[in-house]
Length: 76
Length: 170
Image 1 (spheres, helix red, strand yellow):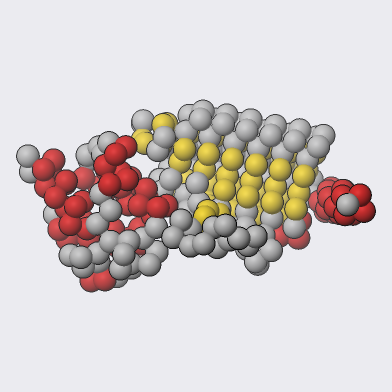
Image 2 (tube, chains in turn cyan, purple):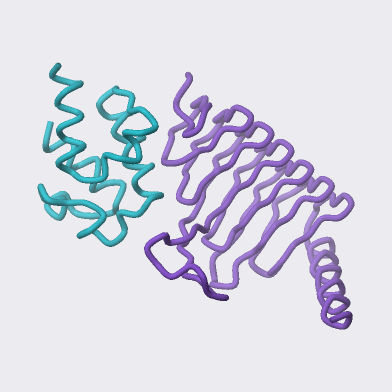
């Protein structure tokens, strides 16, 4: 799952997969802005066949928090 | 003050005449086209009343294919580059924008930081009234967007989208 997640985030941000580290977020990836955040969440919904709430779309703003939310859904 | 407005009005009329001279476009009343040199049309496009097209000052292209219909009060902001495929129909009051603000930058200035992302809309798409197509959106061919949807992201061919943010409905 982690590889798929990093691949999906990297694709939206136009980065190499290795550039999406476990600490990745808007603070250390310059073009991870509010527009990219929306694009990332929609891309992940499509990739993992899940649905995020409006609050989650705005709150899951780091690789770690997204991974945690996805694990709860995909594995739970 | 008056002179400034007269000059702007004359410039916009000049822009329209240049488009009408060069392209096979039906232009209805009160259509505005800015930076017309960056805008190209295919054959038999229609710009309905009060359509507004803002071209690019930065070298990007705004390309409308053939038989594209831009309905009344649509707004196309093409600073970041925009292409619309043949036979695509934009319903009334559709907004396609290629620019957005940077909330992390200083916004209270006469010239705030703006960010740009190209929008590509494929052939034969139907964009419902009032929909907003956000910067960076890519729609494949024959997509349908429900009225008042707000579209982000990249989508393939023949996808139906609805909602805010718009999600796949079929």
